[in-house]
Length: 428
Ligand code: SF4
Ligand code: SF4
Image (tube, rainbow, N blue to C red; front, side, top):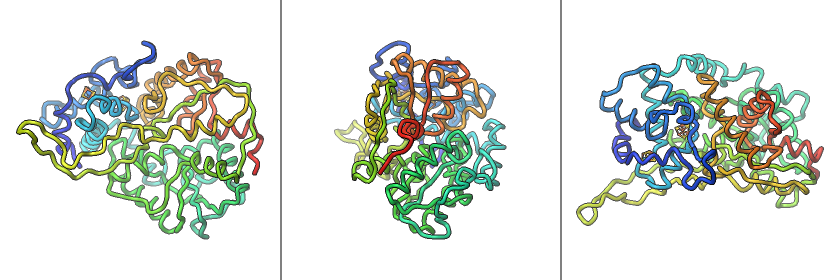
């Protein structure tokens, strides 16, 4: 795939600007869907604006400037513009695919923000951009967990970079391990052999770096012979389902997010949740667990003319409306907490507003990432929540930091962190 391959899709943009807004907003304050244009306040920052930039580059009518690069990279690749566009246009534009190729062109021209040079170097040398390779499994010290690179297990517990390197997430990981032990699951982790799954490199336009990381990850999965991969990382879950198929790669085992796996154990009666709370909770749909985890299916059809004028797809392509993401299972787990009131933010499920942490945008434009988080936190407060809960450690870390900086009357918790708080344990 290249920018040239996206030409027809770019040309189908009608300049309608639906990519900036929730289709049927409940209020003006939370009607925007795109953190990038809220930050830049200029059309070029929107999904449609980026599409025009991509087209101009294809036609050799744009030259690089700091403004152009900022308008493309002050963006979390959250996919909201793509989902909103499809609400009106179906697969006509397939905006997210255009954005991936726009970034790939900028990166291959050596024009991506310089801060990402270090990130790339670290990804290559350490297998992560968050620390050193030998520090990856510090969280597991003192725990008795099988090393799946040495001994086979039914379940490969994939940890993810943010979980592994952010010490504030380790309690959540430890709790997940205790749940699997209680349910009698035969599982293991890859300790320091695990590497970043490649999603962030792909988002930034470094597609070959992404491929190398993906191939390392797949080699680990294959060598383990595990029939089920359970990932604790929303970012990796989206990478496995949305990015790997774009790289022509597939996973031969079942892939589940940890919320799905734990929920199935609860349904089977192998675990029970015994939690009570008087808090008002709201659930933040992480983009990468939601709309970006809808599986990508390559389409190799063509367009034909019918009635001598209408151009249609043959065979029809399934439209990724974002509804195939992972929305209800985390809510079902929250609903098990007795006494808690659960309220929804205005922008939820496939219309969720990105918290600003995705795609490593905060590395280059931290003020952009903070602005997005502030909007999301304000929305949680407006919904009446006293605690915002999410199932992505990247979102949890970022939102918690910004809530603290703003001294807000709102707690931010990871879903398993909350359950650990309320139950002390989840008993079998
Ligand atoms: S990208 Fe889609 S939603 Fe945005 S202006 Fe173009 S057609 Fe409209
Ligand atoms: S991916 Fe998200 S932040 Fe980027 S342009 Fe689209 S909606 Fe805006």
